[in-house]
Image 1 (cartoon, rainbow, N blue to C red):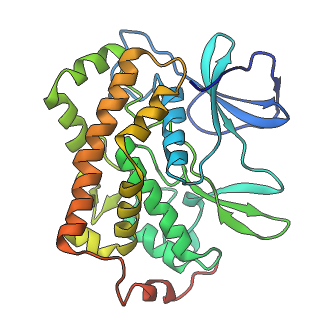
Image 2 (image 1 turned 45 degrees about the vertical axis):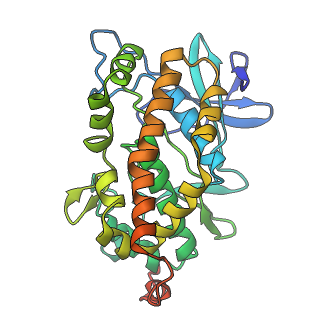
Length: 319
């Protein structure tokens, strides 16, 4: 079992963090952390379709550890308590002169409007990434598809363009990929323990939460993306060769046993929440990632296409 930390005596930091959730900046063992609180809502207000999340601290912690288990750079997270509340502590990765440059802040100079578009087109995002000269385009696109595929497993409904991005230093003018962060919208955080118990008793309810929702925070050809439909569609797989590569890599790394270990090591989870996470992650693994992986193998779809490298030799974007 992972350690459960006591943040009650931590010194507060003056740094402010944005976002809708209650947050505090504190110092713990010489490092600055952002504390994100579980948002408490009354029983009468509990509704998995309500905006406020109740168990986002657990969602953040488990999801980040699954990214870490897969070898994808992700923010460091700790679970603990402050002022009688369960919190997830996210280590501040904006250090050594680097600041976060969310993806939504890019593109307006060259005709892409990511910040004012609630669900941007995935075609525009990939087109911009492939032409951006500030960072290795193939590496940046790989990170995007890594987030997309793991978010499909985790059921993330809020990976909007403000929830990922680059790190930039004004001193050195260096740009690098930020680690994955802000995963609190994964793993159905709006569902109460009582609701989870009902869901895992019903195959229909489980499948509804795989095939109908949650959906990705992007559009494709003007339609909001269903993870299942997008990742198992032959045309989409042929259109985005790096997506094919990432699906194969991630599916070959992940196992039900590895997922179970992350869940079992998470402190303070209720027994029903452990069973719910295990049930939903195993179902999403089998019904989304495995189906996509099998289709890639059966149809012989390959990321090694002659035109693949030409994607990154279009007119470069200079910002």
